[in-house]
Every structure is written in structure tokens, then in C-alpha cells.
Length: 106
Length: 160
Image (tube, rainbow over the protein chains, first blue to last red):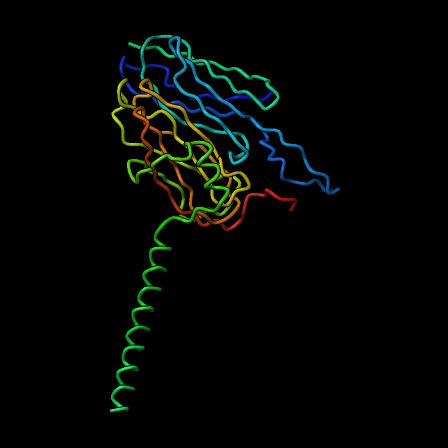
């Protein structure tokens, strides 16, 4: 199971633009490298990331082999209501890793 | 008489030569000022944006280190000038590489609920190159920006 790290402000004023950072541990193997025996190491990458908040997808990212290992992303959203932000990473095999973070909006 | 004709011919050829030289200079200049777009990059851009996409320069700010010591993880920051309202916002931000084995590097989908169009991530760079970022707006227009980065140790895309 990959581990995830999320940074979301605990509190925000309604209407504020908040900064979100998300990271997942993953090799992001490009499929262009060879092992010590000259065998091609198969590609293994995260291909998608989404963030949903207040009932709607607010951010989406498509990843290719050019994204560094342990993919990190920083983006923004507007604080609308108190609730959970849901994060989803999908790898090339369709496996999904989920995480969430709560924000209190005043 | 003959001599002056010769002299005239000489000056003409010299003028021609000069004009030609200037022409070559102008060509070389325009060639270097326009961005290099190798075939794979042009293909990837046509696939992602459509063949006839007219891309304007501006509104996109790309921040990359001028010198990346390790191409395996290079911080990339992008911001796009946009009011980010329901009627006028950035839809997608495309990041293209001209030297990586795959020209598509990453894409960000944002919208009015983003508040501002500002994203960051870490990318791999196979060589010293220019990174091109294109933003698609809600009205369908494309805006472009980029940054040059010198890579001293390339990301290990091959078997080394």
C-alpha cells in the first residue's frame, strides 16, 4: 500500500483560496530502464489524481512517465463549506489509493 | 571601358553577395528566435490540442530552476493569468518536453472552483531543454509560455 501525505489548512474563511499539497509514495518506473541483467524494467506509474470537495471534482491531474518518483502536486481551491476533501490516485493497473482531509470553513 | 564594366560586374556581385549574406543572417536569426519543436513534440501537441490549434504567446508563467543538478526531480511551478470565473477560466494546463522520451509530461485540469490557476509538481528531465506549457481557456483559446533549463545529470530514462 503506498503511503500518502496531504497538506490542507485546518481552518479557512469562506471564499478564501486555499493551497493544497498532496504526495504519494510511488516509484513511477518509466519502462525505459534496464536492470543489471539487461532486462527491461516494466513500466509502473500513477496515471491519474483527483481531488473532490463539496460534492464536486475541483482538480484533476494526468501523469505520464515524466513526473518524478513519489509524485507531488500543489494546487488551489476555494473554501466553500466545512467538510472532507477526498483525494484519489489511480495507477496504470486501475488500483486506487484514497486519502481525505478535513477543513473547517467559517 | 572593358575595365569599368568589369568593375561594375564586380560591385554587383559583391552587392549580391552582401544581400545574400544578410538574407542568410536574417534566416539564421529568425530560426533561433522561434522555439525549437522537434517532431515528437509537434505530434504530441497536435494530438493533445488539435491540429489547427492557434497558440498565442503569453498569460502563462513557468518557473523552473535555470540549472537542475539532478534531472530526476525538478520543481516546476506554473501560473496562468485568468479571472477564473464560471464564464472565463483556465480548463487545462499541458506540459510538454522536447527532449524526454515521451513529450507529454503532465496535465492539470482546473476550473472556476480553483480560485486561481496556480499549480506545482516535480518533473523528470532527460536533457537540457525548453519546457513548453500551454493553457487551454474556457473560450477554447490556447496560451503558451515556457522556460529553459540546463540539466547537469539527466534523469535515468535509459539503462545506465
